[in-house]
Length: 281
Length: 320
Image (cartoon, rainbow over all chains, first blue to last red; front, side, top):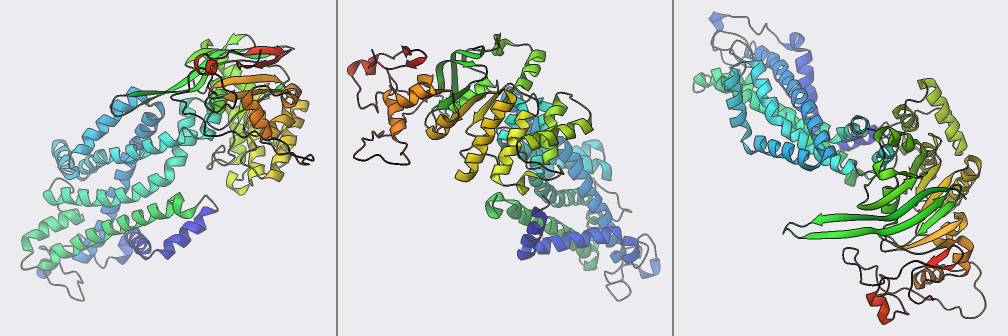
């Protein structure tokens, strides 16, 4: 891996779209970390005298119906979206990886049953399934993250299962088996570490999807609740004013678009770059 | 000589199910009987796809045999209790052909070499690292630090690490599955000499699998020739080399070109055609489709291994 890092970096720099995605992702992360420093106002500061003000130098993105600065709210919103992305990836990734690795390694009937269950989850349109789970759990940010994580589990488990099927026939795994290594040892020592590079690619793609689905849930009212400066929730409230105060829904929406595109471009590019057929042995 | 391993009528079939519900049975190993004595090196030779690697993996209990029994020091490997199997796994080791895929690319050399010791709960962390360094010195790759990754080494060095991994549990018996065929010729010689030296120093027994007769000749005390899942000829190395009897063995030997060609014409028997499909092996003698001397009986009756002289045995109807 040590030797591969500069090559990966080099390939990222040579592919403009991947670079663009990476820059968007990095900007999003910086924005979330330094929100208090960048935001010109407190995102919850109410100033009724300035309500629904159009974009100006004082308020570059305008203000909302109680005069809160939209730029500040959008900047703070990046913290929530990033948090959603990370939590969903962990909540879906860890069980997904374990299910995939065990299912692939043991194979047979066990594998068959697990994979059919995953197929059932995947058969539903993701948003519809997330919607019904979130509705059943009750509207809140945490519940919407759990709902989104649940629908993402099959993505990870299918990927890792595929990797496992090819890894378990590799001589280094056979060697450990021949020396008495138990399945658990092989899964944690060989299979999972060797599937991580493709998992990272998927994680980046899932981040984008998770942000989008979570924002959609908030838009419908099943995710983050209004005073929270969540992008989806901002768009949802701004929708009421879209004809006269276009900026209210537009700027948060633009940021959802940029964040999702950033993670998708970065993930797509990374997948091509990490492809051994392109980089050779 | 003391018997270490005995295979009795070992079979390994792979069943392939097709989408249309049909079943195909690939008979990779089809009724092999073999004895390996302690301290000897048995060379197993045959074309690619004849089942020699499968036989090696069945021997290590990596693949369960479809039929037949494997005895190790008189104990039936196929019916051994779990705790005893774990003990046996220290005594039997394998070295693979491809030094690239046989080492985990995500593990350091130290981790690769100490992991077998960890599996068997041997020693403290410090002792394990000491043992790893000692073993590496034994295989001619002394390293002051073990934190490097496999991709930082050359093919030959990697194969030495692979051999060190097989040696670290102080085994009695090692299956060498084409350990040199993925290496450069110059490196091949070094690795072969190392394998030979280790045999003497550590009193090891080898099953040496290869398709390269000159390599087999150099290392083995006995040679077994395999064709389509069966042993067709077996005997002491000098007997087989000087007096190959089975037409298949003859063809294999005549395909090695001598370094100093003798004067005059030497007749070379070359094999024609490919190895028949093992899902549908020929009836009778499996070699009859390519045998220049085939007779009607060869097509109908499967020949059994018959003793020619001493330990030299051949499965061919033409030998009386």
